[in-house]
Length: 260
Image 1 (cartoon, rainbow, N blue to C red):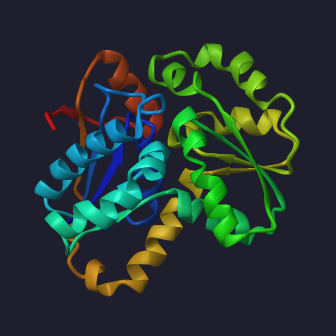
Image 2: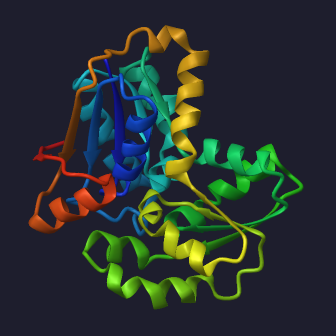
């Protein structure tokens, strides 16, 4: 069986690459819903429906574990898919999000004043606020929506990012910044040039968290194939997406268009 990674677009490729670098022996399947990106301005019901369709595809492709690399899906759909979707359809499989491990990493650093840069939907869900309240209640959390970043990243607009990012960071009073969207890992170096404190990027967090999960759950790890095969799927494919995929992944890869 395989490890699946799902994202609303191509941002999750950065996490996928980091996971492969950390755990190269396993087989992976990536799915990016490029046909309907971004998810950040969608309703909770729509996000859940889109996520369920992606999970259907990945579990049918023999995934034992699926990582919701999309923060919006993790915020809006993870709990419902774990509590309702899995027991009804795939009770022996597992779905993991990216918000809980991110908050774990930030809380472990001892940060007391945190700002989270994320999509509008993730901010509206208050998922990061609730998770910090659960894990580190003394931590002050500010959520800052950044709705233009994903469209710019997905549409070859990185040359326009600088002033937009500067506007989003303006006035944030925190010691630590969390990049609460996988797409933002592509601009983490620019963020670090502009941000005075520490910056947490999920491509630097999730791989070790997954490795620890597999170590703690041999009942799932033992089912995973170890032939080092990787497959990358998208729901819409253009030359621009292929170019961005190479940027996000850090090397050439072949995208395959699929229906979910």
